[in-house]
Length: 176
Image 1 (cartoon, rainbow, N blue to C red):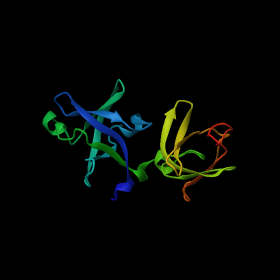
Image 2 (spheres, one colour):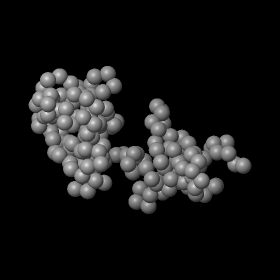
Image 3 (cartoon, rainbow, N blue to C red):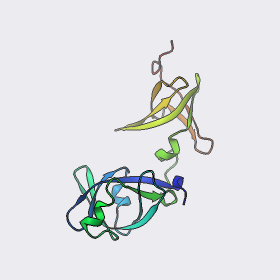
């Protein structure tokens, strides 16, 4: 499979115990689902092209991390080989979202237009700030515009066309 068909859900930051349990930095909104027993994941070395299929045996939260035991890794020596590797899922395995909900990978890179100002730039990052996300949009000169994603601000997203229409609140960007 091509790299764009995979999405990162975690990064192995350390080992835990002698039986090959992995300490995972979570990069997903639903770790209970992503690390559920019998779930298929893929081990990926950053800057590598190999995706090794693995299956979750068990998983549990520990503070802000997760401890994950994979069926294919049963000892500390083997587990240590995978430090700093990523845990991936196949994009096609993602459940569908409700209307007007989007996965981050669908939003990153899209072009944003304001209904009054026209072209604003492209989404470079998304900040999850509690009640709503904030899109970090980089304009043509490299400046950042922070757009709160609220029903009154985000008017339309076209995932196929990679565009979004917004109505920026007054005073959000410097007009000078």
